[in-house]
Image (cartoon, rainbow, N blue to C red; front, side, top):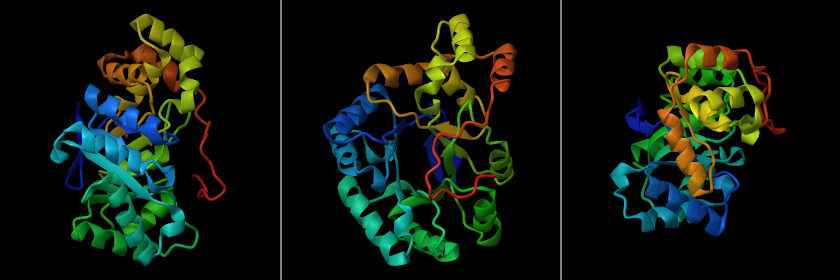
Amino acid sequence: MSKLHTQGIDLPRLGLGTYRMQGDLCRAAVESALSLGYRHIDTAEMYGNEDAVGAAIADSGIARKDLHVTTKVWHENLAPDAIFRAIEASLKKLRLDHVDLYLVHWPSRTMNLAVVFETLEKLRAEGRTRAIGVCNFNLSLLRQTVDDIKASIACNQIEYHVMLDQTPVRSYLSKKNIPVVAYAPLAQGRAASNEALTSIARKHGATAAQVALKWLLDQDDVAAIPKASRAESQQANLDALKLQLDDDDRRMIAALPKTQRFVNPSFAPAWD
């Protein structure tokens, strides 16, 4: 498994997303993924599953240094005291003394961005997280964070897949040597039934979902965290790494409409 080196951490490029997994289902999914070789697990306080993730990690027997764990603070908790309470609660549920990456899950219209990052830097200095970063930040917020505040962020986690162009954000981040972590990398399951992807998949003896995932992971400075609760799906995502897409495949994918955003809550920022 290749890794992205960013802000002092090595981020495995393929991880397991756990959004909407709960309880025993989540625990079993994380246990399965770890047994198959996954070493990058993504969760969040809002997911309500950090306890299940923590139980699976505790039972895995895998050395802490060999695991990458990401969790996130919810946009309603971006005041300093709330951030400290949030990470303490997350660490307790995860049964860890630190996470590898702590992210602002969504920006808040009322947050004081400088104070948020001052607080996150304190968490890093205290060893509660090895690195900090953001999710769902648009170009304007990224510029404020990186150019104005001079925050050292390890990634921007955003919706990114074959049906959504993220070139402006990716171009900016690339100039700053900041990776993208793609969530919903299979377009919330829609990639699996796309005709163009299915045609490419037949040529390679693969699935459309594997084609969509490999297209992402062939790009520089991109990691992906597909959600997969079944061992078969987790293994299929690992097997996508073996695919070799050619120029014709990439041309077909480039021709797909890329304006379909599927995650756009009312509190989302104005997308670029």
